[in-house]
Amino acid sequence: MVALVTVAAVVVVSLIAALAVPLLTQLPSRRGGPSTSPSARASGTATPKPSTSPGPGSSQRPTMPSSPMDVLKKNPVYALKVPARCPYQSMPGSEAAFRKQVGKLVDCENAAWQKALAPTAVEFSKPKVKFYSSSAKSPCGKLGITFPASYCTGDSTLYFSLQSYVQGRYFRLSVAEVVMHEYAHHVQNIAGIFDATDVMDESSAVTTRRIELQAHCMAHYALVVSRVGFTSADRRELEYQWGYTNDPGGHGSTKAEAYWGRRGLAGKNIGACNTWTVKAGRVK
Image: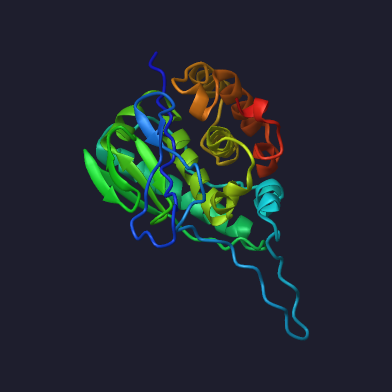
C-alpha cells in the first residue's frame, strides 16, 4: 500500500508594501520535497467586507469580527454546516478523467459554500482551477511537480500538477482528499484567516501548523458531508494514511494529523476544525 503524499498550500507572503513581486518562505513538505507555507500576513486575499449601515426598513447584514484574533478564533464560517452534492468517487482511469473529476468536485464545493456563506459576512468567490504537467507560473512563483497540488492566494487558484493525477490513484478518495484540502485553503483565504495570522504571538511554524491542520480537518469533514460515498473501508484507509508524515515540525505529527482528521470526520460543523483556540501542543 502506498502512503498518500498530502499537499501543502502555496501562500503569497507580503513583506513590504513597496515590493511589487510576491515572495515566498520555504518550509519542508509534509510528506515529500519542499513546499511553501505562510510565516507572515498573506497578500492578495479576498478580505471579507463588513456591511454598511442599513437603510430604513432593511434588515441588518452580519459583519466580520473587528479584531484579527476574533477573525481567527470566532470566524463566521465555524458555525456553518456545509453539505454538498458531490459525485460518488472512484480512482480516475486517465488524466482526462482526473481533470473532469477535479472539476466536478470543485463545482459541487462552490455550490455548497456559496449557499452556506450567503447569510454571513464572508463574501463568497469561486477559486480558479489550473492543470499543468511539469511546471507552471503563478503569482506565488514557479510551480513544479514537487507540489502535487497547491493553492495560491495571489490569483485564488487551485493548481494541480500531473503528479496529483498519479497520487489520485493511491486509494478511492485520494482525489477528493486533495481537492477538499486545497479548497479549504481557499475558504481560509476568503474568510480573512490568512490576513489575520500575524496577530499570533508564536513561531511561524506553529501558525503554519494551525493553518495546515485546519485545512486537513476541513477536508475530512467534507469527505463525510459531500456525498462521495464515505464508508468504513475509507475510514480505515485514512487512518493508515495518517500514520505517515515527513514534516512533523511544519505540518504536524502523525498524532496531530490523526486528531484533526478524526475531528473532521466526526464534526457537526466547521467549528470542529478551529485550530486557533487550542494550545500549541495540540498542533505539534
